[in-house]
Image (cartoon, rainbow, N blue to C red; front, side, top):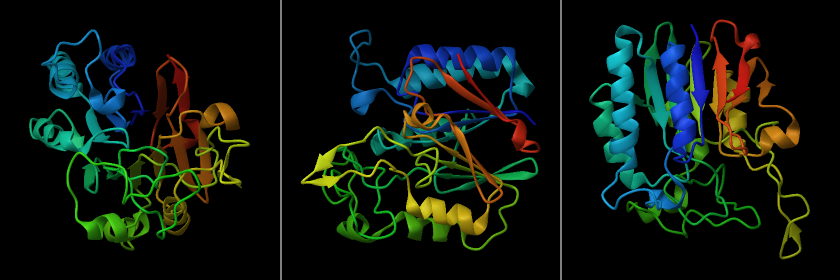
Length: 286
């Protein structure tokens, strides 16, 4: 079963077009999209877009509907989450299009895929960025130097003060996964696991109030979850430069294969894998 994985396309139409072309030529069984799907800046209009343009409905949905019409029965199952650069106000559009059968919205859900189960989770630990729709405290109310807490910044949808202060990624993962057997699970995250080859940021030598910033910016909770429950495969993005800095887009935690499709170049980074033979996974820059 061939699967494609992409992430952090940030509304770049040229990369999406490359993806659509590849899917038409080589339809995978499933496509995983790991968040940060919209243009930067809360999907504000670019100079080439009209004021009434809606990226999700007028670009993504339109192009995927065309693909579905062309491919028919071999149109892939698409699993999608949002990322920390995507405003949660657009979640209703994502759900609306999911109801039409173009994709599955996987955040905080489990969705079957043949003999496998797909889980999705979009939240990332506190970052230096202002938008906080998809940020949570990680394992405690600690915030790294240079980062802004989930209680600050701004959101595109309101949440309770309790959620801002007391929810954590660790608690969310416990609620989502419990103690289930995950040997057939493919987990779609936006954040990478902490202190791996997938979460290395270009923060070397940067100090905040005389304290060095941590060059590893992934989630401790996600790393501990993988270590403990050992899902079959985990898919990650968020840290664009990590593969360039570490020389690797993949890692292993125990028996779990961890892949990242984040990329800081102009190309589309496409990870291609078979859940039945993960050792042969490939990453192509298109």
